[in-house]
Image (cartoon, rainbow over all chains, first blue to last red; front, top):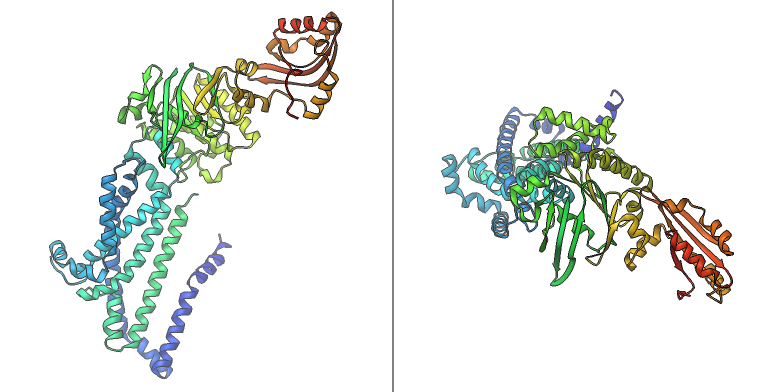
Length: 262
Length: 348
């Protein structure tokens, strides 16, 4: 094991190197643009005020994304399963149900998020009692992510070997047993990658949550970095977002790799 | 055990009707290994998939152990299916489960208690010789080992029938042999009825008791293995048999010898087929002694059909004064199949 250690840290370095180089490049550009002395620049980046803002916003982003990913999986998984099993020749074949579901999912996916955010305000108020704030932003994020997750689940399950499903049928498995014991376990690594993609997407979407006072890193970048010309805030927000996405993606890749027995 | 009556299945693709099964009737006896052989597209796959209703036939009935399986659906069908094992060309194992997990799968489906599952899985893995691979994943196994897992899985619920859908077609000849030996072993040991479809005559020859030849959706010939092999009545059957057993002379050799034979009264080139005990008798030498015949052996082969020896000789026989007719009659009386080449038009 001791021999593996250097290799692993080397792999981790390779994984994060592009991100780190990007961050360094951004910092140099910003530094050059601000025309500041190095001590002044570093002073700005280490101000306690900035770090408090960053910490608060990171927490908000994690909360919004974490909850909405979880809810989106709970809502999207059965939808995705149905999108597969109701197709002709499948275990719970039903052309009508499929047609309805696929239409609903397509409509859901075609509405721009910023529009959805505002359009479902009454629904949001009904669910969480308010239409502004971090928790209120979770509702539109979830609603937007459910059809996305449904499509991702659909494509993952469609990749499952038809022969395996047939073998289960030949053994007398019921449609429910096929879904629970065959389709989902066999597709699990792909599903984990799909959830990772959803989480990364939602980190991006959550930037728009500022429109309903949701807060989060994106909101911080817009309000301070863009509207108040605070380059330092903008820079550090981007740095945190890059790191966040890297970490989420790495975790997802690692989990999928570990689960994959093919 | 299995009774198939007037089974018909028609597929429609792009408005074209393809008759996969055309009024197929078969009876498969309890405890026998029944081979169904045909070229790809002949309908054999559809036929075996109809037996456990993976494919729903358009017409006809299938009875397994007296129960009409074609009349069942839903829960009842699933219950019957759990008593029919099936193995596949591409194994169809769950890649996310270990070997033991795969074998446990049908038991879980059937609602067997956990403790019992564990015991049964061990038993089955021991039976197929994979006791040491219980915790490996299918991806770590060879093709032959995967098929052994498939067999263990198929036997889990103590089925009375095992369906083999091209079970050895993806395996190399040596592995095929070991899998066939395993199938034969469980057939004997458990009294299991085995139905196998294949395009490999070798497989049929090796382990089948009975065989049916399917061509264009129709059963063109069927019966005990030896009978079909010895007296193929159709071109389709002959084609399959030729490939593995009935030796032929190379065209040039055949022509050369046929040219020597100008008078079919005094000389013939013939193929003699010996089945069972006659394969062990010194027929040619006694022929020569009794009938003043010259025999020139051009080619010969001895093989076996399951447990029955099966020999073939291509000989040139010469005799004067009508001795030839008597000689051929003598051979026929010994139960030897004779096929005379002289009258056959050569392809060249």
